[in-house]
Length: 217
Image 1 (cartoon, rainbow, N blue to C red):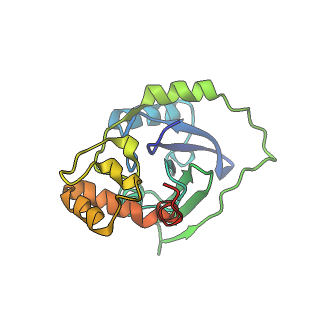
Image 2: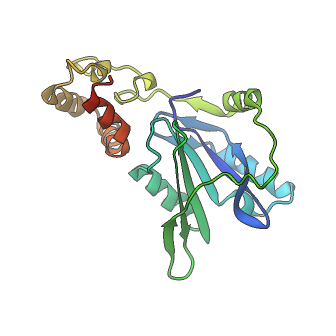
Protein backbone atom coordinates (compact mmCIF):
# COMPACT_ATOMS: atom_id res chain seq x y z
CA UNK A 1 0.00 0.00 0.00
CA UNK A 2 2.91 2.37 0.70
CA UNK A 3 6.60 2.76 0.00
CA UNK A 4 7.04 4.64 3.26
CA UNK A 5 7.83 3.42 6.74
CA UNK A 6 4.83 3.21 9.08
CA UNK A 7 4.96 2.82 12.86
CA UNK A 8 2.78 2.21 15.86
CA UNK A 9 2.44 0.38 19.15
CA UNK A 10 1.75 -3.28 19.89
CA UNK A 11 -1.06 -3.95 22.38
CA UNK A 12 -0.35 -7.01 24.49
CA UNK A 13 -2.13 -9.59 26.57
CA UNK A 14 -1.99 -8.65 30.31
CA UNK A 15 -0.98 -12.21 31.20
CA UNK A 16 1.67 -12.41 28.45
CA UNK A 17 3.32 -9.06 27.77
CA UNK A 18 5.08 -10.35 24.64
CA UNK A 19 1.86 -11.61 23.03
CA UNK A 20 0.74 -8.77 20.75
CA UNK A 21 -3.02 -8.93 20.23
CA UNK A 22 -3.52 -5.63 18.41
CA UNK A 23 -1.59 -2.88 16.64
CA UNK A 24 -2.45 0.81 16.92
CA UNK A 25 -1.43 3.58 14.56
CA UNK A 26 -0.98 7.07 15.93
CA UNK A 27 -0.79 10.26 13.89
CA UNK A 28 2.61 10.41 12.23
CA UNK A 29 4.64 11.92 9.45
CA UNK A 30 6.60 9.43 7.37
CA UNK A 31 9.08 9.08 4.55
CA UNK A 32 10.64 6.02 2.96
CA UNK A 33 13.31 6.02 5.71
CA UNK A 34 11.71 7.56 8.79
CA UNK A 35 8.68 7.78 11.07
CA UNK A 36 7.93 10.80 13.27
CA UNK A 37 5.04 10.41 15.72
CA UNK A 38 2.83 13.40 16.43
CA UNK A 39 3.20 14.37 20.11
CA UNK A 40 -0.52 15.04 20.55
CA UNK A 41 -1.34 11.78 18.79
CA UNK A 42 0.85 9.80 21.19
CA UNK A 43 -0.60 11.65 24.20
CA UNK A 44 -4.17 10.92 23.06
CA UNK A 45 -3.29 7.27 22.48
CA UNK A 46 -1.80 6.94 25.97
CA UNK A 47 -4.84 8.63 27.51
CA UNK A 48 -7.24 6.32 25.66
CA UNK A 49 -5.29 3.25 26.77
CA UNK A 50 -5.24 4.30 30.43
CA UNK A 51 -8.97 5.09 30.35
CA UNK A 52 -9.61 1.61 28.94
CA UNK A 53 -7.91 0.10 32.00
CA UNK A 54 -4.59 -0.90 30.41
CA UNK A 55 -1.22 -0.45 32.09
CA UNK A 56 1.77 1.11 30.29
CA UNK A 57 3.52 -2.24 29.93
CA UNK A 58 0.56 -3.40 27.81
CA UNK A 59 0.64 -0.56 25.28
CA UNK A 60 3.85 1.49 25.57
CA UNK A 61 6.66 -1.07 25.46
CA UNK A 62 6.52 -2.60 21.99
CA UNK A 63 7.40 -0.29 19.09
CA UNK A 64 6.50 -1.77 15.71
CA UNK A 65 7.36 -0.25 12.35
CA UNK A 66 7.75 -1.32 8.76
CA UNK A 67 10.56 -1.16 6.23
CA UNK A 68 9.53 -0.62 2.59
CA UNK A 69 12.33 -2.87 1.32
CA UNK A 70 12.96 -6.56 1.94
CA UNK A 71 15.40 -6.07 4.83
CA UNK A 72 13.94 -5.95 8.36
CA UNK A 73 17.29 -5.16 9.98
CA UNK A 74 17.30 -1.96 12.06
CA UNK A 75 19.13 1.07 10.72
CA UNK A 76 21.36 3.30 12.84
CA UNK A 77 18.45 5.74 13.10
CA UNK A 78 16.18 2.95 14.34
CA UNK A 79 18.71 2.08 17.04
CA UNK A 80 19.12 5.73 18.07
CA UNK A 81 15.34 6.21 18.25
CA UNK A 82 14.94 3.03 20.29
CA UNK A 83 17.54 4.18 22.81
CA UNK A 84 16.26 7.76 22.99
CA UNK A 85 12.52 7.08 23.24
CA UNK A 86 12.48 3.80 25.18
CA UNK A 87 15.71 4.08 27.14
CA UNK A 88 13.88 5.11 30.33
CA UNK A 89 11.52 2.10 30.24
CA UNK A 90 12.30 -0.92 32.38
CA UNK A 91 12.02 -3.02 29.24
CA UNK A 92 11.00 -2.49 25.63
CA UNK A 93 10.87 -4.20 22.23
CA UNK A 94 11.70 -2.93 18.75
CA UNK A 95 9.96 -4.97 16.05
CA UNK A 96 10.34 -4.44 12.31
CA UNK A 97 8.36 -5.98 9.45
CA UNK A 98 9.62 -5.74 5.85
CA UNK A 99 7.56 -5.88 2.67
CA UNK A 100 8.29 -9.56 2.06
CA UNK A 101 6.94 -10.39 5.56
CA UNK A 102 10.42 -10.98 6.95
CA UNK A 103 10.73 -9.66 10.49
CA UNK A 104 13.15 -8.66 13.22
CA UNK A 105 12.65 -8.07 16.94
CA UNK A 106 14.91 -7.13 19.81
CA UNK A 107 14.09 -6.87 23.51
CA UNK A 108 16.07 -4.56 25.76
CA UNK A 109 16.15 -4.44 29.56
CA UNK A 110 17.28 -1.14 31.07
CA UNK A 111 17.11 -2.03 34.77
CA UNK A 112 19.93 -3.60 36.73
CA UNK A 113 22.99 -4.40 34.62
CA UNK A 114 20.81 -4.14 31.50
CA UNK A 115 20.95 -6.37 28.44
CA UNK A 116 19.41 -6.83 25.01
CA UNK A 117 18.77 -9.82 22.79
CA UNK A 118 17.21 -10.66 19.47
CA UNK A 119 13.94 -12.57 19.90
CA UNK A 120 11.91 -14.65 17.42
CA UNK A 121 8.66 -13.41 15.89
CA UNK A 122 5.87 -15.91 15.30
CA UNK A 123 2.10 -16.00 14.90
CA UNK A 124 0.51 -17.90 17.78
CA UNK A 125 -2.33 -19.77 16.10
CA UNK A 126 -3.42 -21.23 19.42
CA UNK A 127 -5.04 -17.89 20.25
CA UNK A 128 -8.34 -16.76 18.81
CA UNK A 129 -8.21 -13.65 16.65
CA UNK A 130 -10.55 -11.91 14.25
CA UNK A 131 -10.00 -11.82 10.51
CA UNK A 132 -8.29 -8.84 8.90
CA UNK A 133 -10.43 -5.87 7.92
CA UNK A 134 -8.46 -4.32 5.05
CA UNK A 135 -10.93 -1.47 4.53
CA UNK A 136 -10.62 -0.48 8.20
CA UNK A 137 -6.82 -0.53 7.95
CA UNK A 138 -6.96 1.73 4.89
CA UNK A 139 -9.19 4.22 6.69
CA UNK A 140 -6.89 4.23 9.72
CA UNK A 141 -3.87 4.72 7.50
CA UNK A 142 -5.41 7.67 5.66
CA UNK A 143 -6.55 9.23 8.94
CA UNK A 144 -3.22 8.93 10.75
CA UNK A 145 -0.33 8.75 8.29
CA UNK A 146 0.95 11.78 6.42
CA UNK A 147 3.62 11.04 3.84
CA UNK A 148 6.33 13.65 3.50
CA UNK A 149 8.47 14.14 0.40
CA UNK A 150 12.11 13.38 1.11
CA UNK A 151 14.14 13.94 -2.02
CA UNK A 152 17.56 12.63 -2.78
CA UNK A 153 16.85 9.01 -1.85
CA UNK A 154 17.22 7.15 -5.14
CA UNK A 155 16.58 3.63 -3.82
CA UNK A 156 12.96 4.78 -3.33
CA UNK A 157 12.16 7.26 -6.16
CA UNK A 158 8.52 7.53 -5.09
CA UNK A 159 9.62 9.53 -2.07
CA UNK A 160 10.34 12.40 -4.38
CA UNK A 161 12.27 13.34 -7.52
CA UNK A 162 15.11 15.79 -7.49
CA UNK A 163 17.56 17.16 -9.99
CA UNK A 164 20.99 16.96 -8.44
CA UNK A 165 22.59 19.11 -11.13
CA UNK A 166 24.48 16.04 -12.34
CA UNK A 167 21.62 13.83 -13.47
CA UNK A 168 18.07 13.05 -12.48
CA UNK A 169 17.92 11.12 -9.23
CA UNK A 170 15.81 8.46 -11.02
CA UNK A 171 18.90 7.57 -13.05
CA UNK A 172 19.93 5.44 -10.05
CA UNK A 173 17.43 2.90 -11.38
CA UNK A 174 19.04 2.77 -14.83
CA UNK A 175 22.05 0.44 -14.82
CA UNK A 176 23.52 1.89 -18.01
CA UNK A 177 23.83 5.29 -16.28
CA UNK A 178 24.81 4.09 -12.83
CA UNK A 179 28.59 4.34 -12.99
CA UNK A 180 30.63 4.64 -9.82
CA UNK A 181 31.71 8.18 -10.72
CA UNK A 182 28.18 9.39 -11.39
CA UNK A 183 26.83 7.76 -8.25
CA UNK A 184 29.52 9.35 -6.07
CA UNK A 185 28.92 12.72 -7.72
CA UNK A 186 25.19 12.48 -7.00
CA UNK A 187 25.84 11.56 -3.36
CA UNK A 188 28.22 14.51 -3.02
CA UNK A 189 25.46 16.79 -4.34
CA UNK A 190 23.06 15.77 -1.55
CA UNK A 191 22.85 17.87 1.57
CA UNK A 192 24.15 16.36 4.80
CA UNK A 193 20.70 15.20 5.98
CA UNK A 194 19.92 13.41 2.73
CA UNK A 195 23.37 11.85 2.50
CA UNK A 196 23.19 10.47 6.03
CA UNK A 197 19.87 8.73 5.39
CA UNK A 198 20.90 7.49 1.95
CA UNK A 199 24.14 5.87 3.06
CA UNK A 200 22.55 4.46 6.18
CA UNK A 201 19.75 2.81 4.23
CA UNK A 202 22.13 1.33 1.65
CA UNK A 203 24.06 -0.26 4.50
CA UNK A 204 21.07 -2.36 5.54
CA UNK A 205 19.18 -2.74 2.27
CA UNK A 206 20.74 -5.96 1.00
CA UNK A 207 17.92 -6.21 -1.53
CA UNK A 208 19.21 -3.06 -3.26
CA UNK A 209 22.67 -4.49 -3.82
CA UNK A 210 21.36 -7.92 -4.79
CA UNK A 211 19.04 -6.39 -7.39
CA UNK A 212 21.79 -4.18 -8.78
CA UNK A 213 24.28 -7.02 -9.09
CA UNK A 214 21.70 -9.25 -10.78
CA UNK A 215 20.60 -6.50 -13.17
CA UNK A 216 17.00 -6.52 -11.93
CA UNK A 217 16.62 -2.78 -12.32
